[in-house]
Image (cartoon, rainbow, N blue to C red; front, side, top):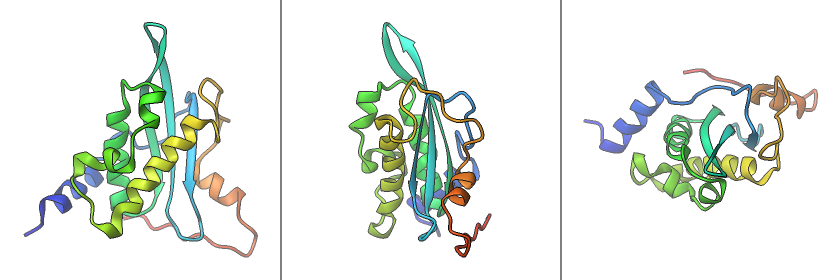
Length: 157
């Protein structure tokens, strides 16, 4: 019988929320490395509410394990309605909380999502309010940064 954590991860992977690119994003963050295979990109769209910018929606793409996909899925749901300042204070543990406590070997998945969020909100890869380049995909980012002799293996489950 599967444990509760495994079931929640499988459900989030079977029905991921907010998966995919966002053409009208205000901010974008990418973390990871083609060397280890785990990469995650997060797009964020803001809206104005009572004179304050809040996160209207967030989406993601991931080249990583099922746990990374599950954490990104639940995290993008949690971010809706938060200000950038509130989102910046969220830890990987908080972003993964709806799944339950992750085993130590999977904590890096939550850190990956936290890193993409912080990258987007810090302006490292497109500042809030600054339009993200059209066609800026995670796969394109991987390919652009590769030397000709390096290879990336993409496995779709």
